[in-house]
Each structure stands twice: as structure tokens, then as C-alpha cells.
Image (cartoon, rainbow, N blue to C red; front, side):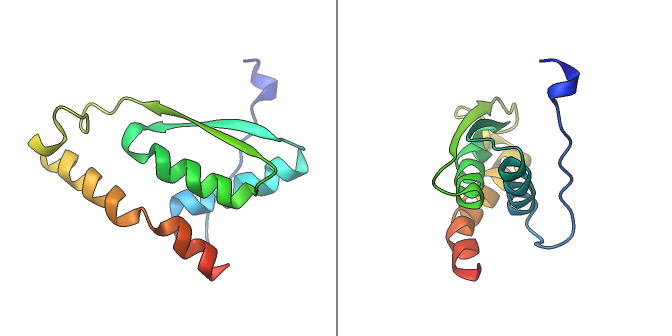
Length: 106
């Protein structure tokens, strides 16, 4: 991809959720740039929650795809074998309702 096609979208401050903060900031930029479809690239265990939050932030008129990237600490075969894998999985399971909570608070 040509470097001039890449746009930094800073997300900081409120709301505190990094994923929701990124989704919210990106949704504003996507609306400004008339983006109607895009893919998110994130580690596999976080992919579904990221896609849901970005979809919620961007609205139903934007198509959101996801590209799950491998995470050597949290694979299907070994996530329970390390503290980091268990922690990552637990964090995603607990964070799964975040999209619904964000929608309620909007």
C-alpha cells in the first residue's frame, strides 16, 4: 500500500476502553473520508470483540471485516499452558459483553 494512503487516527482520553476508543476515533475518520468497508487486523482471540465494537461505532452502513493474526501465546493448542495465554483468554471472555455495555451507555 502506498504510504500516502495510510492515515494515523489518534485515539486517547475518553472513553477508557482502548478498543472502543480506537473504534470511536476510527468511525469519525471513516465518516469524514466516506469509508464504507474496511478490515481490522488484530490477534485472533481479540478479533471478534474488535469487529463487534468497530461495527457498533461505524454503524450498519459500513461493512467491517476482520483478519485474525496468530498470537503465539494464545493459540487453540496452547492457550491454557501459560499464564499469559490464560490471562488473555479470560480478559477476552470478560470483555465480550463490552459492545453491549457500550451501546447501552451511548
